[in-house]
Amino acid sequence: MSTQMTARAFAVESVELNAPLKAAFDYIANTSKLPEWTHAFKGVREGHAVMETPNGTVEVGLEVRASEPHGTIDWYITFPDGNVAVAYSRLVPRNTERVVYSFILLAPPVPLEQLEGALSQQTAILRDELRKLSTILGEG
Image (cartoon, rainbow, N blue to C red; front, side, top):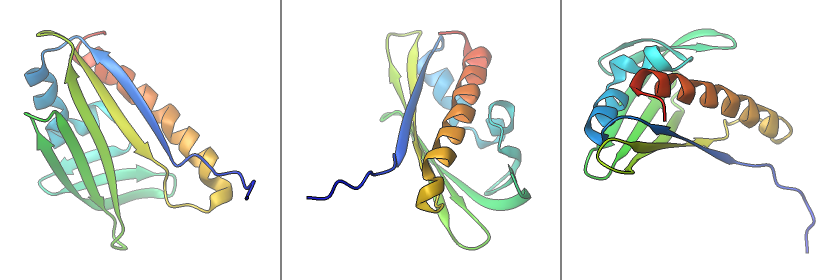
């Protein structure tokens, strides 16, 4: 039996939004709105985005796969080296005027010894982004 410690490979964050499902979905699924509530996206145009990274800016491919009936909004980000990162999220209605927005943050592809730090840093950024989104769409 192995007693090797395993680094956390994902985090789930959520926020309650004071917005009807359709309004929240339309805003979050609209890629042109990403720079308003996220830190990384500095500019978005059809199928592409400029992302701010610790090493500067980079142009990436950006595809949103969204389903209003299922409440899912997923972003596929293709980096210049061909690697693809996926950000998964979901809206769940609480009632006609409120939704819960959850976001699954997967650990970035970094060496294992950096994994926990990188994921916890990204989780802190995500929490701040969700607070900003809540302010834009209505406090939960």
